[in-house]
Image 1 (cartoon, one colour):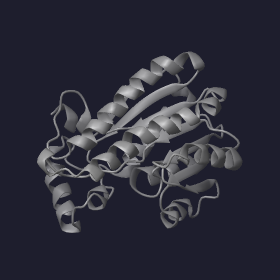
Image 2 (spheres, helix red, strand yellow):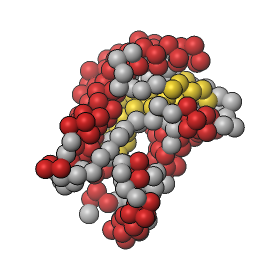
Image 3 (cartoon, rainbow, N blue to C red):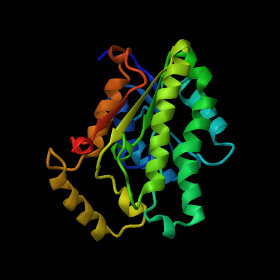
Image 4 (tube, helix red, strand yellow):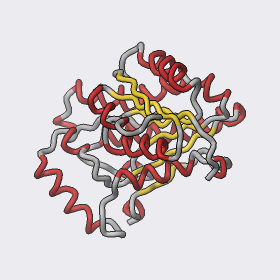
Length: 250
């Protein structure tokens, strides 16, 4: 890969995939702004990486897009890569859904990436930049997702944004790609309401169903995102790459 320093924004950078992505970019010498709700978690991501800056903000707040754009300009002087990774989940069938949980998922997983990307179009165009939307392999194609349908619907919507923005923004020099992780050991299930024991059981039960016979790690996703940001990947746009050990094609 070319070793040109880039300016990267990673949302949801306080844990899991976002943390791994931020550190992977930082380790190759890029400047990174990690965005999230919890300052201590962001500080942990940045620890030991002088090129990582933090921006504690709730992306569902109306002022958030401008706040992130301002923080990126002050910390890095621009934006080459935007990784829309922040997401919240919530389990339950249709009859059990609560309005607040539904609205939180739509606001964080779908509305926030739209408005943040819109706020950063100028810097991204100036840099001939890249937008990476982190979706989910569970929401690809014609697959169903009972019990997690709202989350899946937001991720399927993000995939459509990826394809649509690639066509819309290509003439402005901006690439747009999606990465669809499979079952990744991030702790997200616990944050969505599962007990530690239930989450461990879920991971253990899923591993034999994956053709590669293991669940993924955040670093598995970070590796691909960093590679897609390389100039040598410069003809890739509009694609959504499943990184799921083959689970989505079983």
